Image (cartoon, rainbow, N blue to C red; front, side, top):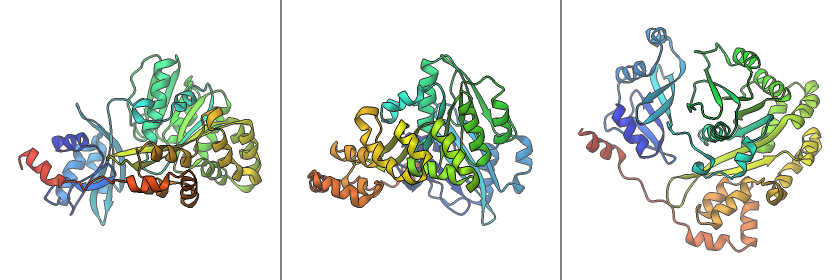
Length: 381
């Protein structure tokens, strides 16, 4: 089983699905493919799950588990973020691959301004996107830059711990929710007493987490966290909407003062195969801070991000997608589908005469070979 997981990761698997009554499957470059030729029984899935669960008490109570998160590693391959669940009364496992090697901004092909964002002394930085868009990797790259360049104390609060950073120029404290601290809420209350300079919060999941993150940012810490939002404007709207109407004016003020940047990303298919991150970067300027405080000016923010590209290094999704199309990395139709406003994106590309040429040059990756057959041959099955 470990060899099978290792082979899947070598072929670029981001996730592995193990479900009773189905083949084992892997998501490779965004496409879910079978890894095995035989469907798994509930007993086989349970046996795999018991190997992944780290605590004896949890293993003994397996039949009562409905949702369970943990992490698991294979020497020489990498680590996995593991979710064990029930579906139709039978066990299922979804494993997200996490490389041992910590990526850099350059490794991920992210804009160089991300390193400059990580260099902030204090304030709130948010990395947003849908599930599987690479948010954890981007946050890991920021922590990696801080760890390589600054003498600070970094505390991470995650459920479960994903990337494992070694102490370098900085001292890093990893806290696993459920193992090292009971809950996110208790861990966040305690973290401000642990002399942190940088706090990474795995997810801003509720009002309490958001309030504590803002408090930490306001008291001189750099806070990095994530939200499941599509772009910068939606991110701020989502945070404000968590609070009661009577609280929203004050939250707008606090957010405008504490927020330093929002990095939103989407993974899009490369022409040559695999995926690349399309990234929107909003850097807080005095004008954008004014727009956050005034609900009637929120719609101006996207234009301000676009206008700040040369001077500040900000960019909208559509600006980055345009670059990816012009450099031949992404096909025009793929970029158009991922744009904030596909109709506007099409119009702008046609204005510059790029869309027609890109349509003609579009070449989608070919079909994938039968991965289950290849795995079976390799494993001698």
